[in-house]
Image 1 (cartoon, rainbow, N blue to C red):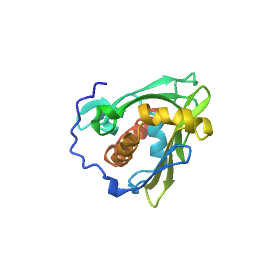
Image 2: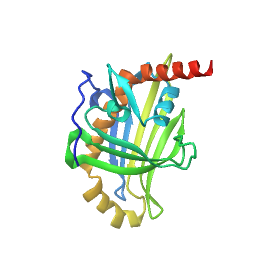
Image 3: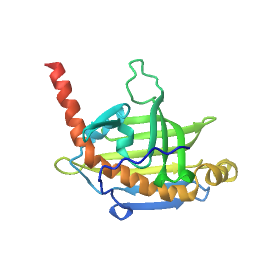
Image 4: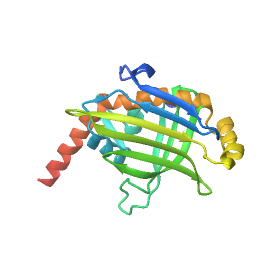
Length: 219
């Protein structure tokens, strides 16, 4: 997988120590990766919902135009697209399929190219799942909660594997050996803390710009 050239915005991204994390494995070999992020300053749940509904396309940042997805994590993100959608107006919501291409820590060994379905998206959070033959083998959920004046509490939970005897002996060993290794899990914790923290750098201005444009159109 070809990595994109890194974008240098001069950001000091958040570290693992800024959040509370937990890496655990169930008896059936399912990975649970939990993050309680540092409170996001200047971010609201409404901004985050808007972001995930409008994650596609380009944006202007520091005088240049970039794909929004690449701005979100200027080092690790490679590509995002709306792979499939059930909404005739092409709006993003429950039932949309995201194609996500990235490499945690810019390490090709930790590259991901995956299509996942949105099963929840509102101002309380978003949930993505991946199913194979009807079995949910992956989920990623983020929760948003107001935390004071224009701040947001943000929690994340990634679950990798299928919780059953079939998962324990067949599915999960394959996933953890070839698709999403334990090392990738640790790398994802750092990656997700960085990308969530990066919202503080660009999302408030982008959101205000969107709201301003919309209000002008209404008038």
